[in-house]
Length: 309
Ligand SMILES: Nc1ncnc2c1ncn2[C@@H]1O[C@H](COP(=O)(O)OP(=O)(O)OP(=O)(O)O)[C@@H](O)[C@H]1O
Image (cartoon, rainbow, N blue to C red; front, side, top):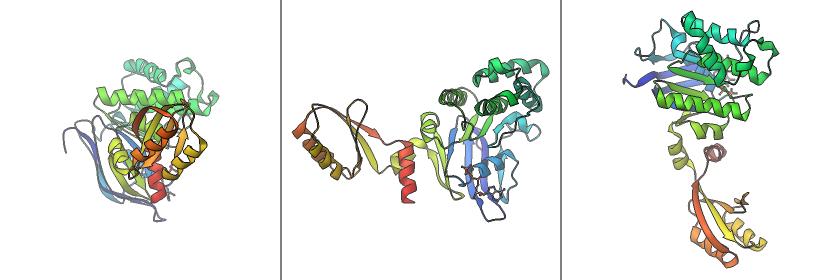
């Protein structure tokens, strides 16, 4: 195993009695990796996460940890695991929930309080530390679970839909925190979510699973570049576009024509569309100021690909 590799998955299959599950997964996670796990409902994301966490038995293959980071003697030390279902202790306060996680991770009592404070700060629950968790909203309870998963500064974060139920600002703050961890410390993150825009903004790599199989594992940028069959053009212009011209553009651009909030014309074009012919149509009607060329988002690329599969 490469010295930068934290965790390696070789030929892993988990097949449930009904024949569903995941088959022949080969993956590896190096330090610095921030990996998005994407796929439709039932694709196999939680199965993979639970297999890595050890709560799901494998039918085949093995999961190897680099013993530089992970010793099987102290698994809680290494994994920052937040499963999809809530696993908080309802009879404890917010702070005690996090403290319990730290003690299970083998942290010494004297270092625990500052780690609790830091984790609660990251999830914006500092003022609520003495409340019992059943007094919190659903999103706040989810944040307690996150705090418990991250408080011990694990080498590997294993997070199953951690932002579900979180407000936009908490989700952004949490992903920003994870990004800075992967950039500055020896750790890696695997995080599942259906929020592809959030994932694209923070993660570097992605695993795309469909019906228990890996469709893609690699950089998000490469996925978008290689699989998007369209490019976006943003056209800034002076004047008023006639509806006739817009209709003409819509025929060529197969209806994917919009006017954005800055009153620019947005065209999502198939790669084989001749852009200059479109521009001459626009120029007949208005004065062109600028044309910007953008890649399509991960979300649009993914939805497009799903439509084709
Ligand atoms: N304990 C189980 N017994 C039998 N089948 C299961 C079990 N757990 C999951 N499955 C099936 O395995 C497949 C993968 O499920 P999994 O929970 O891993 O999907 P997921 O990608 O996490 O979905 P979601 O986005 O809905 O959380 C599904 O078809 C699911 O019905």
